[in-house]
Image 1 (tube, rainbow, N blue to C red):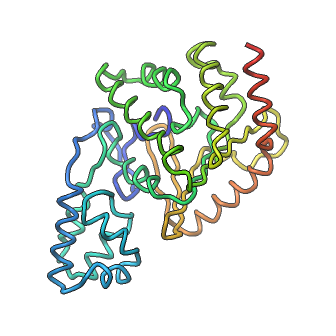
Image 2: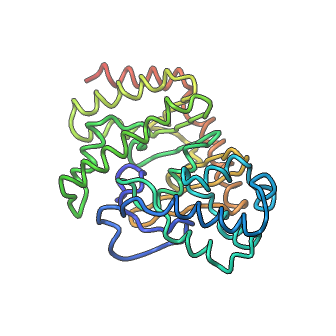
Image 3: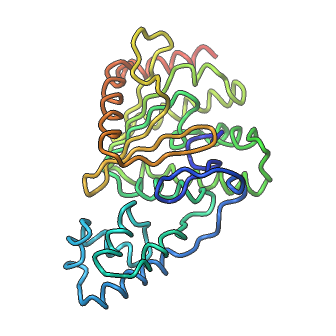
Length: 294
């Protein structure tokens, strides 16, 4: 299981195609070629005689995005390498370089594409029915997930992945202009994963986060006669270029979604679930009642 929807365990490449087999349970690859990839793009752009301002509309991204990619400070969007290679007549070199991109220690290679998009997203919607999403996990809860993972992780792997998760959580506070919306099933709190103290810390942690102006947290009640989320957990994200992407995760694989038809279906389900879940205030009240009952 991918314990926490943070890209720890599954196998999927940078652009969202499925993978299988071993290797995914080892420690993620070291930081590699962001700056090198940026240099490749910059050299081919200059070879074509284009400024960043001239190149940006050819690939459909902003000048700021081009600058960040060339500086090696962000991963390219999913279709950037193909567009850039075609626009710059790069003989497949840019596409080849993109296959080896990695970013952050503690995050699996395939998850880094989604994690990078989160860094500049305008909005991010998450529905979870298996466990508390990584962005909302309290430290003890996250450590319990990593400790329980099978096959077992080494101590250094647990610490690296826990550090990566806690660092990623800073998005909620460091991106005040990004709207984060979460729908969580009530039973996630009733499971008591890690024990009573861990659960109490978790509820307190989520209640604190729910006070942030850019964070909406709704609870889907245990009894609900109609439920639009029975297909499973999902995430939706709007980029700074107003593009929408989705992410779906199972036990042994993940899927990066860019197909507009699939995105449309996910948006419909998400909108329906937001109306089916408890209101923001009622969700907070329920969490306080669950906290007080312990």
